[in-house]
Length: 464
Image 1 (cartoon, helix red, strand yellow):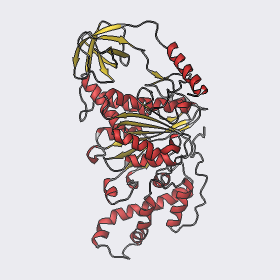
Image 2 (cartoon, helix red, strand yellow; image 1 turned 180 degrees about the vertical axis):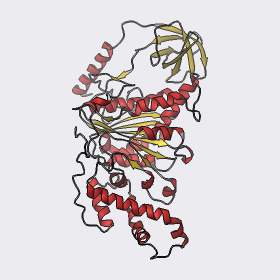
Image 3 (cartoon, rainbow, N blue to C red; image 1 turned 90 degrees about the vertical axis):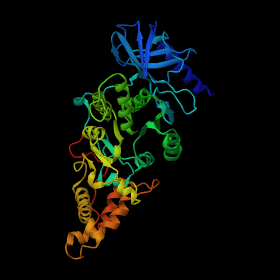
C-alpha cells in the first residue's frame, strides 16, 4: 500500500475510533416473530429509527433498527438474517443517529447501504462532516430555483422532455421495457459533474453488468454506486435509497452538479411496505401502508437545487409500473411529487424502437419556460404531427384513409418515418442538446431555428 493511501486509511480509522461511544446499553431478546424481534430491558432509552446490534450464538453482531413499540417492548427489524439468534440473546444499543462520512475519495467506488465498500478495493476515506442517512432537504425558502438545462445525451429526452439542473423526473415503465437501458445511456453521456447511482432491490447479476458494461471505466471515475440486491433484507433495500441521497448531498454541498439516478423507487416502496406490515401497520391501498406514502416525499424531496453557493441534485427515479397500470398507488403518488414523468410504452418497445419513450404521454414541467421561442415552436410542431398520426393510426393501418383528404394528416404521414427514426437511439450514440434541435429542424424541413444557448437558465430561474 502506498504511503499516501496508508496515511489516509490511518486517518479514517482514527476518526472512527474517536466516534465510538463512551458506554453501551444492553437489553435481551424476548420474542421473535417472522422478521420482527422484540427486546426488553431498555425502556425509555430508544426511539424509532435508532440502531441496535443483536449478538448471535457465534458472537456475530446483527445490526437492527427500531421500527416501533408495543406492550412495553421495543420492536426491531434486522439488516441481516437472524440465523443463530434466540430468546435471551443480548442486544447492544448502537449510535442513536446513523450517519455517513462521504468524501471525494468515494468516486469510482461501489458501496452497500451502510456506505461500506463492496468492490474489493481499499477502505473508503472518511470525510470531515457527518451526513444523516435519513437527512432532510434544505428549507424550501432557502433553496435556489431550478437552473439551466442539463444535457443527458438522450435525444428524445433532451428535445421533447428537457431536464434542468435540480429537476426531479420519474421514468415510468413495466418490467422489461428498458428503464435500465435509459439510465445507462444517461450515465454514459450526461454532462453532470458527478453521478450517484442507487441500485435498490436490483437483480444480483445485473448490478455488476451495469457497472462494467454500462458505466464502464470512464463513467466510474465520476460515479458512486450504491447497491442493495433483491435478496437483501427490506431494511437494507430501503436504506440503500437513503444512502444514495446522502452521498448525493455531500457532492451537492461541494458545489457540484450531481445526477442522482435510482432504480427503482417502487422497490423502495415495497421494502417500506414489508417493514410497516411486519410492525403491525394496517394497509391502506393495494397492500401499501400509510407510511409508504409519507416516506416517498421525504426521500424524493431531498433531490433538487441546493442553497445559494451550493450545487444541485438532478434526480431521475425509475418507477416499476405493476401490470402496466400507470395509475397504481405508487406511480400515482410519485407522479404527484416529481417535476415530470417519462413514460416508456411496451407497445413501442415491441415495435423495436428504443428508448421506448411515449412522447405524447410524457411531461417535463420545466417546459416550455426553459426553452427559447424558436425551440418551443419546433417541439410543438413535432408534437402536433405525432399526435395527428396517433389519432389517425388505425385508419392509416387499415388503408381507410385516402391521401389528400386532410393536409395535416398528409403531413403527419410524410414526417412519421423520420420522427420515428429521430426518437430511436443506440446506447453508444450520444446527441447533445443543440444537435438534437438542429437535427429535428432539418427533419421537419425548417430553417435553422436560431437556437439560444441550450445551457442557459430557463426564464425566471436562478443560475445559482
